Length: 103
Image (cartoon, rainbow, N blue to C red):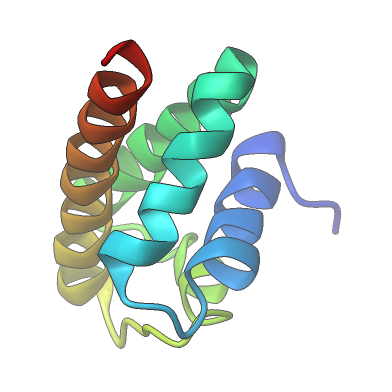
């Protein structure tokens, strides 16, 4: 079965970017990339929003992508919490990166 675009983006985010790094460090690097490539920002936010929405509906479709990282989720509740936290930290790091680039 082929992964959907949001699943691929979520897997890339968790397996490639987040992995074992502290979230703020990893997501700062993602923010740096998204400032350079705004379409990547849309991909990241889109994947997170779809995954958060699915978690709110009780779906566990996002667990395989999350569990490819050093962070893990054992159920839909822990996945939802982690996804919301990742989105929050990413957006905070994005604001920091944008402020530094404008200074």
